[in-house]
Amino acid sequence: MNKKVLPITDIKPYEKNPRKASADAINAVKKSIERFGYNVPIVVDENNVVLTGHTRLLAIKELKWEKVTVLVASDLTEEQAREFRIIDNRISEMSVWDHDLLKDELRAVAAAGEMADWYDESELENIMGSLDEAGASAIAPTQEQIDKKLEANENHYKNRDEEAHSRMVEIKCGHCSEKFYVDSRLGD
Image (cartoon, rainbow, N blue to C red; front, top):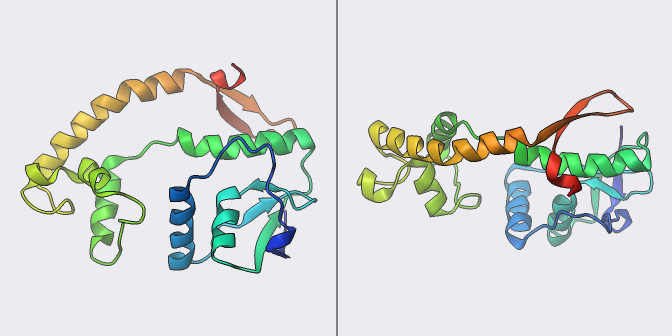
């Protein structure tokens, strides 16, 4: 992949992109870029059509940037580009959180950072323990309260994760031989 700087007006969204960015997603990306910088470039094909990064493009437009650095994936066939668009979005949906580590990380940034732009209060309560149960802030529940809430959440999602995993099929890229996993229902 080559890196280049393009005027925003030269970058074209993929018209058949099945993933639609919500206003919340665009705002979250804008806030992330404002706070941490532009660290994940948009990927385009040789015609400057977006392969990945549609939400970033919309956020950058709202930030009124005139130019942006992109990665150009000029070695993909049209079929590979379509697969890459789908797989790139699908992979993030396949990941699961390690709630113990997430809680530790949320606690670590509680004093220095602000998670309200990325989590609403009920989500933080769900992860960290409810305010009523903790009798304090959602950032500092007792370990027993956290463990109780985590166990309830894990039991709730365990069956869903196992079901989702059983639907996954392995696909091997004909170009680079990399293996990907895709939900078998995508063709339905």
